[in-house]
Length: 106
Image (cartoon, rainbow, N blue to C red; front, side):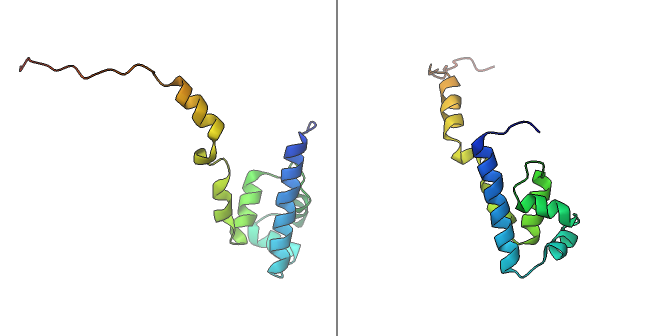
């Protein structure tokens, strides 16, 4: 994998730390959580270390097993996409068309 932006690397490390903390709070070993998620301990270790190769499906499976999947709902939430909303508004037609009254009754 190529060089990732610092913000991406920071976010993957933060996610890994959060997953690890949640696992430790539940007194689960890496082996126990990995088995419960259907992944290897090595894969869970990589996720917890913030490895960029960890898949989103793996992260969601682990969050699900930890009871934290609902926290992922904010990922790419369209209501929080202020830049996207501005771009969408800029593309909207600026003309206002008034309804045409029809005198024809067919």
